Image 1 (cartoon, helix red, strand yellow):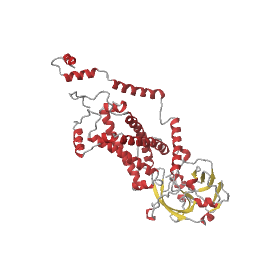
Image 2 (cartoon, helix red, strand yellow):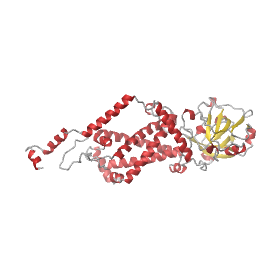
Image 3 (cartoon, each protein chain N blue to C red):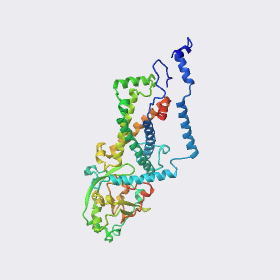
Image 4 (spheres, helix red, strand yellow):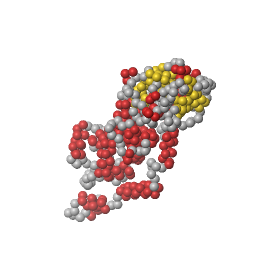
Length: 261
Length: 208
């Protein structure tokens, strides 16, 4: 320090001197910062990588969606019931929602319609509407949640799907019940067996105590209050008990397949 | 940024680490996650807007609802895992206590006044003023609430007690949206100040 002090020129502000000296020194830190930024920029230029368009991003997202299926299946509690509501909470009017206008909704003749049953079941007989109406029915007032985000509370009455599966001798160790419907462009959707056996999963014949209107899926819809709305098939024509994943109208377009709520 | 004044006060040694490596790594991982979550969230919002406006497709991610959902439910893992590690490390190392506490009302008022009159010093980046403490602590709370409200929208049956805590599914959506808006407001201030005080940005990249 003694020597340093002797180097100081009398009359020069030592603060300013130190400041000037500091400014003259190479700022290693600053240089590293700029070099790092430049190389990162150069890398993106060289690869021409566009995250959203790239094939690998789509693949990665599809893989993560499959992982999310597994996570949702793992946290699915077969005994957890969807909350139920008093009749006063029912949303009026209950919204019609589909990938087509109401005018294009299927017009199914109740007299001619038969529910086809296929796959891993003992009794593959088809069921008329009158036969199905004779099965014991229960009513639920639950919240329908759309993949779009909105929700509405409705009243659905029908036969628990698990009772029907038992009745037809379905192999309930199979992985899916696959529904095919009358919607234009052929809506279909797979339902995992554990959800199919959930006590609130219902073959629905009535909405708000009236025969299911065309808008809500006449003659039969599958009400699944533990799934998003797009996994609640309407205008059901057939069901197949299967171990194969057969895909679905929305699932194939990229909606998460489990889509549990 | 005010120019650094050299005083007799011993200046911080050049090697002093302001942002340790774990903070920097988690900060930038979180930055990526948050940007993806917000932009894909806007895409999802547009499918069924809560208010009388939609987000321009030029600032949304995913192209359509299905794509937005795929991004949202992918980035949520980065957000949640990284966020959880951050909370654990911040609590375990005492960094939260050291950096963010105490926050006093009088300190916040005084520092706000100083900030608005451009008298607030950024000389020592390792010490937060009261406004910074309040904002950084506050955004951690908002981060926790946005994850919990998001989970309650995603799983209103399996996590129905959590959903009920937010007042039900529909209200949870508004909570989720409000938290997003708060994070966006925070980001405007946060990014603007990082650009005004570049050495703070440098510290978040190389540590010093």
